[in-house]
Length: 623
Image (tube, rainbow, N blue to C red):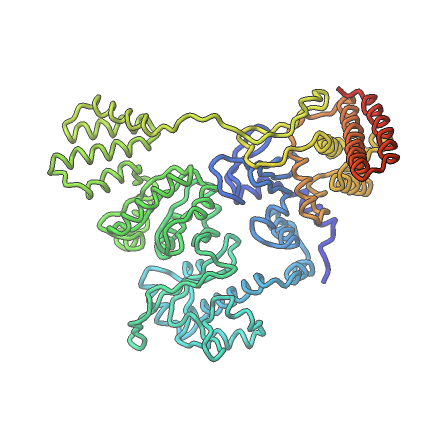
């Protein structure tokens, strides 16, 4: 199969804007000349993820990841380099010949890719059975009665698994899929005799997709009929956790909702799949649901990278109210998201609400009927106390004042203090004093913030600085030596002013450390071949992750825009001085060893060499 030509790769990368593509995954805000946001690769509350539009590069000061647009898609979507190139091309509407797409599809034969193929094939089969066969006719009628039209069913890829335990296995055998993958897929149950049975049967099948829209699991709702009452069957059966599917990480409908979430900076959180689908039909396209479990920190992290606000829209019954309260606590402790509540009346869930009042009424509630967390908790805690009892009244007021310390808005605080004072016939000033007392008690003891030491040429002001803002200093690193700092800064200057190469070659530049020397030689080769230097393109030529990470670190240094002759001269002297100091240390160690074994002649010879080297070191006269 043909590989994508480098010329086409370069064209795609040059036409793409990394800000636009990263912005599909991360909520970016302009900060100076760059864009920043919460890193999609690790959980954080303070943005340390930066995208440089001029360099077409991203970098996280927290976890250290970085690179160009292709590498971003490789890491965020878990795809190969050719797949990333094709995805950027599609985004930019650049045509790629089919021969290269076929090569991309066949490159690598990873287990994960094959498992995804199994799931995609299963989804296609289940959907076909539901929509086009007598086997799925009753289930299709049921879904129509639930308010789902054919367009919605197709949109979400809903299907039907027949009451046959060998259906999927037979199809996969005919298709030539590797039987060794059956158990790992989670689509089958291994029997004692070594044979496999379909895990899902007599169920309406809801595909679960990853952020790329690839099917990675299923949730099957048992479809009860006269022939198959299924008294011993659970209502919902989910795929087990596999290498593809981790329910703590996955959010139902995240792939479809992501664009709207980012656009509106708002995400709606529902309890069930049918609720998400009902909201979608009502025009609320930014709804997602957790996978039948309590909300997890990983899921919260995925949402807050795209949104500023989360609207909890759980069922209106007691269980839904308790789940809402738990979600509030988790979100407060683990995210920066603003929380709103869309509370449903009469104990209805969103799907039931849409059926009873219509999609327009639900969309109106979702947009204009939200309430604050404190308003929700005013009612929630009423159920915990007997407000006909004076003692419970006071306990309730005290509880609500403690909750009010979580409200940042002074206007809201003023409103709710007045409301509590009026309802319970208390002095507003007294409530204010009690609130202030609770706030003071919650304040942590002030501690001086400490950050790991960052590289800085304090002894060489002419060489500039390599400072990183304190809020971005979140990785503890081994302090760099002066030589390493100089090497990094010289490479930074070469990357940004490649014409310096000729001056440095005349100075017979060599680096102290193997990795930096290798980067330098790779730079020389790239620059001589291209006649120019583009760091985003340069990264594509690096196949060593360690070298890639070092290049990313160098590219993101915070240095003055242009170099000076004095700076370059000082940096070269730093290398010379470090090289001499390293030689002196080596000789001193050898001299000590010679003295230990009694080799007086060698000890004297080394002493002479050390004296000579120290004279040379002094002559560098850097300080």
